[in-house]
Image 1: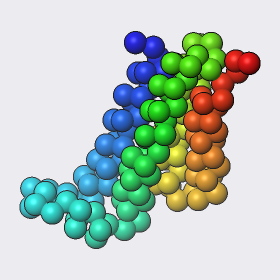
Image 2 (image 1 turned 90 degrees about the horizontal axis):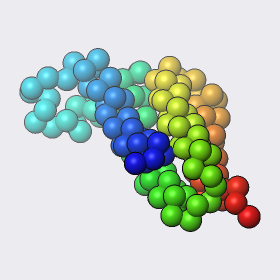
Image 3 (image 1 turned 180 degrees about the horizontal axis):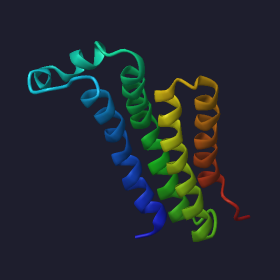
Length: 128
């Protein structure tokens, strides 16, 4: 297993940290577990933004996973470069969540574009 593949696993698990913040800082309990989506719709402020960060993290996940797999199969770059780009993507997603929860909209957008750049870099690579 390469570091890039491990980054895919981290990216899969990361949204659950955001939803954990949204739910458990928002008063989620056994009763709310009957209709968790209804509960999440009632949140506001940082907890609502954490929920949105979770949703965005799930939305971008397929593109990242595909990019890592394609980069590995096509050898678009040396393994160390692929690993580094994958780590940069995961770090950008952590920072994205922090920016979203803190309501730093402009910074969040910049971080989002950086993460998309990582996905594109995995596809394009450095090999000629």
